[in-house]
Amino acid sequence: MADYGNRTGRATPERKPEPPADKSFPADPRTRIPFAIALAALAGCADSIGFLEFSQLFMSFMSGNTTRFGVAVANGDWENVTRVASTICMFCFGAFLGTLIAAWVGRWRLAVLLTLQALLLAGGLLMPWGTFAYPLHAYPIVLALGLQNATLQDEGGRSLALTYVTGAVVRFGTGCANLLLGTVAPSFWIQAPLWAGLSTGAVVGGLLDIRYGESAFLFPAALAAILALIAIVLTIAKPGSTLVAGSSPAPDASPKAEVIDAIH
Image (tube, rainbow, N blue to C red; front, side):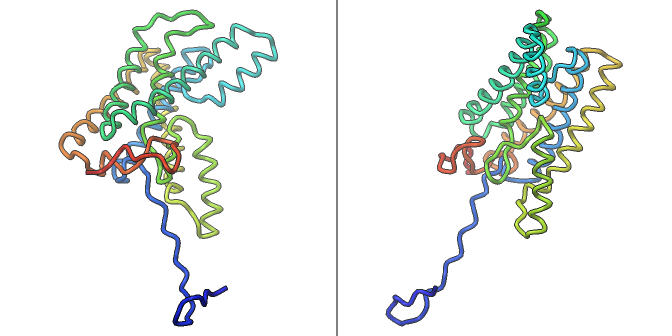
């Protein structure tokens, strides 16, 4: 109903709601999208290698590990329960640690998190194998992939699904529906390339493992190192640039959270 409460007796025009703030990180899609696809490929590669090297233990696909956990509990296979549960906890700790680091380092988020991932992926080869129940050799890789989920975020401030495809497939499906409704989110368009990147990485990881065994982990480590170097160069050469920074809170934070990645 029109508002006639003003002095002129004319209806007060309704104000259009302001569009939500863009909380993507980095703010510029020219770096965010290529980095996202490359990191999805990295995760698929590492997951494929780990799956083959550690008796079908997933490095990044925690949905699969959760199903394996349930089956192990049902069968009373407590050694496998410990093995899978410890992997899930390590991955969760990586996401926890990555989010804290993202909040601490601000505009250096890309450079720092990618450098840590490279070190962990390569450093895992130096870890002792441990036991079947506690695969110490796998933990650095799992930790690196947990960290990866705090690296990038979409326009709503949500972590981009870089280490698993379920979120990408679901968002693509719902995005197609919203496209018909005329309310599609900008992040819809990246979901199919993310799936393709992770799938391609998984194929490459499988082929590398067949040829090089566990040393194949050096390939995703090298990819992370190259991305880290690019991020470091951009951060130093273009401080505060939208290519490596944004105006956003930490990933998956409250909408009222303080901005920590300000563009200067």
